[in-house]
Length: 214
Ligand SMILES: Cc1cc2nc3c(=O)[nH]c(=O)nc-3n(C[C@H](O)[C@H](O)[C@H](O)COP(=O)(O)O)c2cc1C
Image (cartoon, rainbow, N blue to C red; front, top):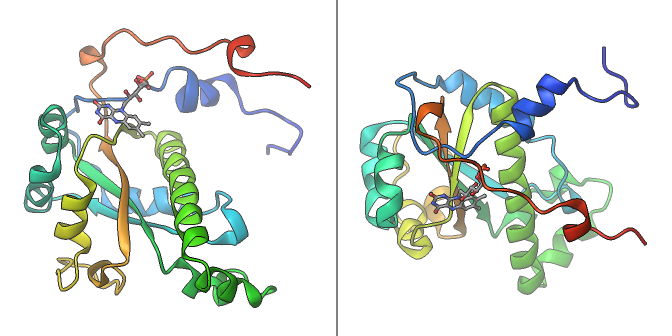
């Protein structure tokens, strides 16, 4: 049992950070819907401001669903995405504050604070859905998956296709998708990566280059 003062074992830290890579090639091993549910059920515990939880996620698992994405992708991202077992669209709901009576019940004024301030809504939705996307990557890696995050796509085109007013979300019942208030943030391919196709890893900035102790 891990207590708050203990660190995770080295092999766990390697899996999540030190040896984890961004993948573009995938083994032919499917990802089950149950695994995707497990990823969400872990990542949802990551913190967001005022517990806003603005991220909304579309998991594309079928070739038909992915074909709808193709026209929005940058040319360099097409093949790796079409061959990935799953592509997650990490999006954010600009009406996230309507859930605050449930998510932040001890401060009923929060809903109105956001409802009155569209600029605050936008910055909050983008910041926290980006964080939640990072939590997704960490959760996926913790559960044995590999990730290939991507921002090389046309957000407006994707939003029109998946979140545009009147669009259907095949097979999903969530009311928020077709209503025009959900916007894409970034994409993340998910699967089991083919490490034989990796390029050598890029370096990172040293502590002294990126951090200051005051
Ligand atoms: C938000 C985000 C957007 C990215 N966009 C792309 C992309 O459009 N296409 C691509 O091939 N890689 C993309 N990458 C992958 C990065 O280049 C990669 O994560 C980085 O070089 C580190 O690689 P490593 O994890 O293998 O060390 C993106 C990564 C992130 C986090």
